[in-house]
Length: 375
Image (spheres, rainbow, N blue to C red):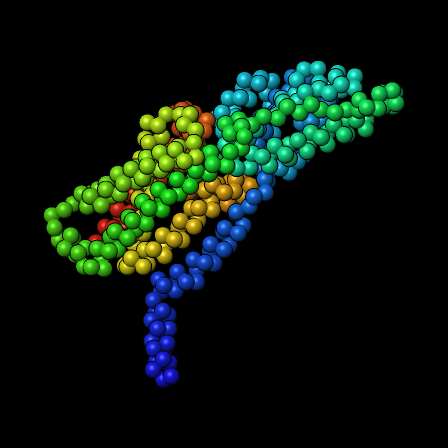
């Protein structure tokens, strides 16, 4: 027993004296618990609506006010053109469009069922839930209008109390195919895990076996060292992305609506961020074990803050801002947009520019961190 006691004492002291390990054991789970629990939710809290009003009547304003009063929807744009609404949906500026046609109020007063067109972007996992919430609001508006109809109409045509003919459509994923939505997202995560983890262990392995000192005394410049370290993993990441896309197409028949050349161009930009984070982790730690712990911490936040499983717009405001810091969130947006919507350069320029900025920033920080380590 005494031997075991001394061994336990030695291991405990070793853990307590290792500040990096203490941080990984205590702080990382606490931070993940606080961030992920608050941010990951399947509830739709905020969906942006473009309201197309071609009737401009009191009844159409009641529809608009009902959506504006809802905590789940926000009318961000008003328009009188269905074409403008379609372009906003295509660009991802809104989650759904609601079209109230001309003659809406007149048909209601006649006891008819005016048609209301509801178009929801099927690009997001919450599309079905958003459609259901919107239909509930429209049904509520119809019930309220029916209760306010003239007593004469209610007595003469009770079967024709106000009802709405809601024409709901889903764009880009009409049947809400789960594979079409998840396969591209899962593929981006796998590419991120492999690229970041392999790079994070790279310099740490050199430190563990002592070859980093030998590399530091060679005529190799810092730029040549970084490029030599990252380029093989960058090419490997693109190869894995290509193989994964092929498997997803053969096994799950995912759509390829956009340009593959454009998609691989953005993937190359994204990989600079993913590999740069791995390089930064590798230059900041001393062992491969520490590199794996820190990478695990980063990847868990990546996963739950990326919008893959839960919509970013449903997160608290602070979590939405935090999610914007994740390059994976923007890459998933591009992959789904190109594959499912056939988005072109004009539709994806914003997330692509953000990825490019992240790539430059993260690589700069990683190189400076390596320079500090080398010194």
